[in-house]
Image 1 (cartoon, rainbow, N blue to C red):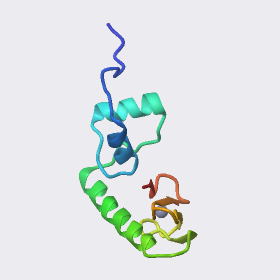
Image 2: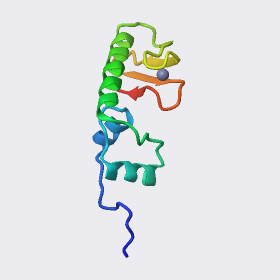
Image 3: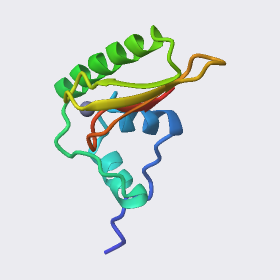
Image 4: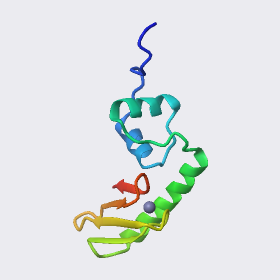
Length: 109
Ligand SMILES: [Zn+2]
């Protein structure tokens, strides 16, 4: 039997980024590829509903941060109530945020 590893599976950078951010649900093949190649600790139990809820929370948090003027601060994570650290780039307003809780919110825009 041939090596059954998912070498045919290709995930483009945008899609991977969205998967990492929990915005879209990867297919089984994609999950396997991510785990195998990137050793990325992705949840196998993620489902459509949770991903949608997470995306909404994430978008809300990002909007809140964008309204702030401090370049570097932290806030209560809307998902786990932990500490969400963020930075806002003065130049272009891009937001980089990361929750202290593993596998919780985190994004770079
Ligand atoms: Zn969190």
